[in-house]
Picture 1 (cartoon, rainbow, N blue to C red):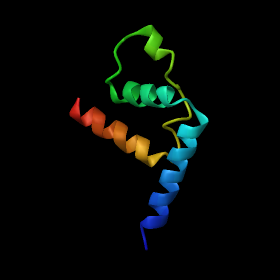
Picture 2: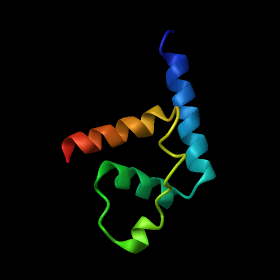
Picture 3: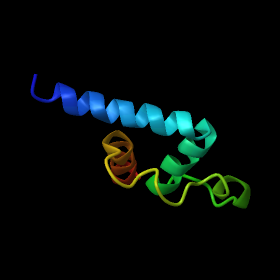
Picture 4: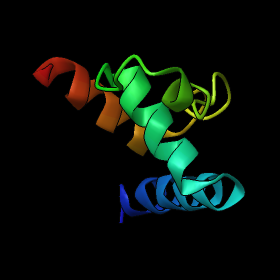
Length: 71
């Protein structure tokens, strides 16, 4: 049972984060921090500059890390 509570807590934080923001803003923030967002001012206005990837949001941080390593 060791890692299951940590995983469930991370999934709950991710769900809360997505529920409290627009899905387009979450996607734009992940793409921006992953280096895959085009340099379009209209898209960059959707980016949440703080709060989304800071703290205990392990799943989004993992996705951004994978995107950075691939790109």
